[in-house]
Image (cartoon, rainbow, N blue to C red; front, side, top):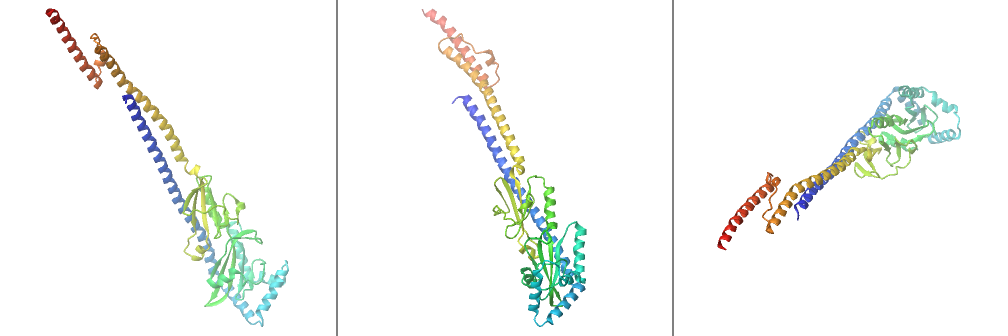
Length: 399
């Protein structure tokens, strides 16, 4: 194999090695960035879900404290006493419930539940929430007695009997009940129903219900969305049935089924999207049991922009290195093969009997190994010429 070929092969091997190392480095950088983004986003989601849980916990705590309010407990004691004295409590509740649902207007009986002292206090709390936030924190608040009948309310409810409702039964059984998000038509809000059992000295008095507007919870997501450095960032809050509670990029997706498969791990790349998924975990088990989860997704073109830029730079650098390798190989090859070729031509000329040939002065002045070879050959050539010169007189004398 020619020296030039070996040189080209060597420099090409170096260039290929540079490409390989760069490719591996770029892939490792992307994997590291994917892992880092996934881990950081998982922590972010966990913090958002915790803040959401804390908002819900704050509302639960505030109204749980309200269950000890004398006005509330006295009102429920009075109502339970009246119902206990009835001959047929169930028949009375059924009759009132039928009349309640048969009319769209507010009857005097309904009015009495809207204007009593407890109802006024409930409405004060409802109005205070609006004054503090600028929107309806609560769709409605009302209280039932131990028999499941309304005692006081901030607005006309859909029915009078409540003990046939799941939220009421769960609150009585577990002390608290939180329902999945639904649209409240009367208040025109998306809300979650929270039921809190009212007890006094071990006696069950009734249930307090608040219809909580989830806008306060969603504000936490929207604030995080605005602070994101990636324009494509999209947060999706899901309920236990993977129905959309909130989509930061599509307000019309609420209560629709989430169309994608949730990541099996905390994060995954699919369809050019990096998706990170986290479920709500909260010290209050009822909030964990609520089953809410939060997902954030980014366009990979944004997340891995720096890595992709690195790859483009790597391609340009590789082209430059290969071009430089070819140029250097060509120069080195010429600097080696050209003198050797000239020296070879001189040797071939002398081998035919032409002792007039000489080694170029440029080769003799060369300080490299080729120069040493040229000078060694030149000394041999001089010795050969001297030997030939001395042999000629000897041949003439013998003749």
